[in-house]
Length: 638
Image: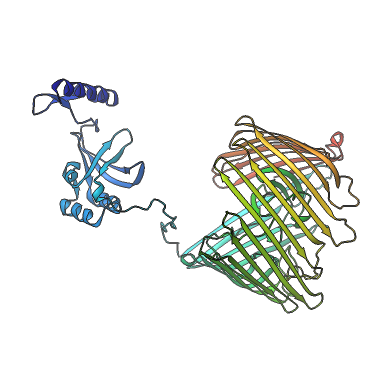
């Protein structure tokens, strides 16, 4: 290289150093051995003393971890050997690791120049406060997997031998059209850990519906033991029986074990109990989302609700329920409107087994006095080169039900699913059910197509331990849907469903629905749809007919959402604005909403606050037979 070229490079380096390190601008250039100006070491330590620091070690835009370094007063940096070797060794071959160990020997620290001949070049970046691995000799790099499977996190610290917590929730409501204020509802939820065993309990005190007497009920009390290395959990006490396929939910008192990689939340107020039913332990607001789009909102009392009978399922295979209870707590449940898929990694399996006495009621304190000894269990596996398989058995003295599932992945990426079950009942006789589903997904990058169809038949006498009376109002159920995402901003869907009723009080029901959602800006979107429906309700004025849906949606931020919508078939509309509170201390959330449902109207507002030691929610709601009487009934809840 010519001398002018060297001088130009030295001058350029001096300018860059002067910009990045103004304190060192006056000493940015020195003279090398050949008498030419050369860049000097950057001023990485502006203080006249050595500074010890813990900094990240970066390589290829990755943070390998943190290690200790020393910035000397003469602008050198020294690396402590033990931390460096622990971070760099996984990237090196065994021979390269031995070479580094031999170079460093017993030294506790080293300068980057000492390992330069080993093929590893280090530099300290004062702008990032990090040590950069600029280069590793390719011949000394270990083989690295490009597609690494996730690994479970290591335990940061072992659990204490003894620990405990208690969450106390208090809810009080005032009905303004009556003089009396309801007695506060009290919810106590806690757990005590001793060794490896945990006692978890949930109690609730509130006025009994109808009588007004104050009752204190045990929701559950049970011992839990976890075996996380084997993804296994054991229970003893009040059980929330886990089910799969066409099994039915029933509360039991006894013992249970289950293996599952992803554990469900144990402290849940609402239970998706299988067979498309949801159990609400208390009055709640339930918002139904279909394929990410709002459908309807329900104000529901405590009870069991069959989602397949609500006029909302129009063939979609992605239903999300957002449940907000009386205390403002929110829980989200997801389920498939078609068949229960075996969503396991290839080769993975899961099982559950529960044995105990059945509870005669779903609400209040579990009562096992009139129950029967019962067993509920399942086993499911996703084979690598064969169809997935699931088996289930539920049995008591009077009722036995055997269920089976299979799932076949076809060559074109589609999936075929089959569910079947047979039952025998001492009172109702023998019965069976079968369901066949097919879904197909075509991924085209930013756009996709999705098809799904399902057909289900249930015999009149099919029963289970959770359905001992064999209540099967629907004989045949057929549904299908097609969804297409035209672009990042535009999506459309067409769906249909038909149900044949065996209940003489209800006619067959059917619906056809088409809708499209378009985001014309990142914040503004519009949804339009048409539907024709007959839900087979002989006394409901809005149970059938043609209608259109229009909605305007505003999402200025990820945590803010406003929407206004109207449905002509049900002559219903709603306006809502919500800011979701972040799950951190000091976060504030709020919402205002108004609904109209062919006459009756509501107006409500809520404020949520998350404190360091408590969460709070204040709600005020007004109800009336129409908007002119919106203040007839008002409730304030804290």
